Image (cartoon, rainbow, N blue to C red; front, top):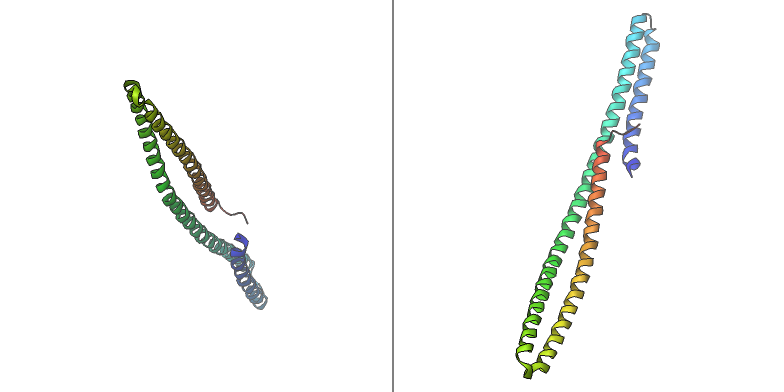
Amino acid sequence: MTRSILTPCRAAGSSRLVRFLTVLACSLALMGCEDEEKKKALAEAVEARMSLAKVTADLTRAKSQIAYLKDELEAVKQTRNELQEQTEPLFGERDNAMAAAEKAQERIKNVTVQLNEQAESAEMLRKEITELELAIENQEKTIAEQQVTIEQLQEIIEQQQGTAEEQQENTDLPEQP
């Protein structure tokens, strides 16, 4: 993808350079190149112009790449924020389910104490305990399912953050010609 962005910049710089060199060659031919110092100065000027053209092309290419990477980084940040917005309700649901499970476990303890104290109502209390245990099991399944979903979303966030960091590191490295 980087090449498609950079190729027009390289072509534009090359075109300008070819025109400059053609004008320079014609000027040299017309001048006759009489003085050795003039030749040396013109050669240095040509070299300086070529270096300037290369630096200008590299700068343009780097600016294009930075702009592209900034856009990509913004897209990754937006996706990360959207995923975080999706996970926040799941965390709340998980916390509520855990609190409900703790309450249910506490109630089971209370029912067990009442069972020991009231032998005549033992059958009714056993039924209530069974229902509460089933509710706990269902809530634990729900918690486990939500935890898996949260972990998957966190992995996606971490992958996107890694991609953003790699892209940021790539913008910090100088590009090899």
